[in-house]
Length: 144
Image (tube, rainbow, N blue to C red):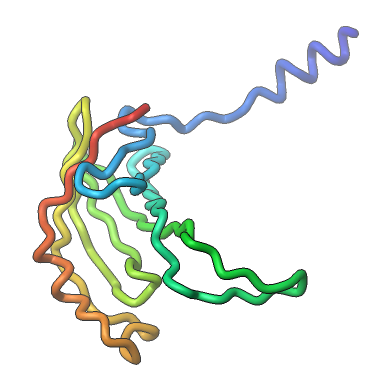
């Protein structure tokens, strides 16, 4: 029993929770959230969205399915200085390389995309990546 107690004491999880870590809801889009995670001044942000599928057929080794909606996620990473994060990554199904600045408050954050260009995958699509910046600012409310 003593061995189990000692093992439990040593196996405590390492937490890297910062003051802005949490889940935030997109104020302008239903079913769109971001999850913020920091470790020191390093930050990753994942965006989760539920999008209509509009007849997209997925084939797997277990069969085919044509869902009504698709759950997606995208990753941004960067650094945090004070309450401001500078992040980069890809959006729109990896079609666009983006850079953005996010300013955090105790109740949410405001993000501004400062640059967007076609990625390697995006150069063969019709997505107008620079037009993404017209949607600034993007506001999120902290959920928990």
